[in-house]
Image 1 (cartoon, each protein chain N blue to C red):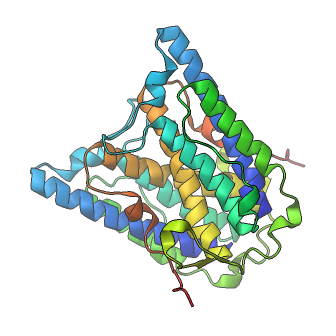
Image 2: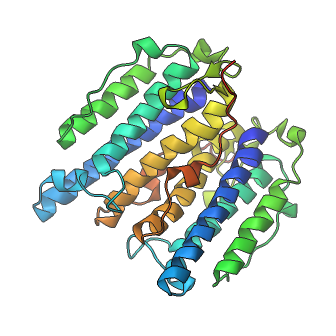
Length: 171
Length: 171
């Protein structure tokens, strides 16, 4: 669970920071304000880029916190970011927070019953919460953030999304 | 591993079938050919919807097959689907194939060294392959398929993407 929620989600958030760096370069080249991108969306009733990134961050942060029964120590974010610098700072604060989880933090998580404010007392097991809720939600918002930038012409490809792989060379 | 690659990926592919059902209704209402949607994309140098779905299917199919050392028995798909019915049949064939994996099929997978044709002999461990390659790729293509339909006005929301949750009622 640590390998997914901490190591892999941190890697994806770092990839997202690098992708936002490409967006920044693109905006500088084309001479427009990056706030245009943060306000972009793929459909009028869909979250814009800023809110996609906020939600990806919260899915990772609260996913780890709920699984490890550490909800009270998760950093609070006010959802007021309007600049790329503020959005990047939020991502960085979540990466730092995930870094505070030791590998054994999730030893009892698979069996824990986990609820959320909107679920009215209903619960999932930790294993169900991770596999059916946290993972698909996290990748949904990271991929949609990527798609919004791709749709707006930022020069990124799937390699930017996936990041480096720990390949071992042939023997 | 079975819970992710077989159970959860099958669930997501079933959700995708239901989403395509919504797309079909939308096209009938607006009186256009669903092939328009299959040829849609979010950027000119990005896969269209049909190819996003093919790649999601292949990621699930070959992900399971490579992890379980069963690559030779994976169904072969010719990538020639041009209609929604053909694309849905492909998804269904992958769901059926995933259903052939018993829970113990992945007992030795985490430690296996796994390569792919494009990797020139380089390998990942099964655990790395699952977490850093299969899962992010699968959700990337499913989410992008969803995003293309959402962008084209199909009336779907994240609930369609996530599907039902196995909630337990409060005690």
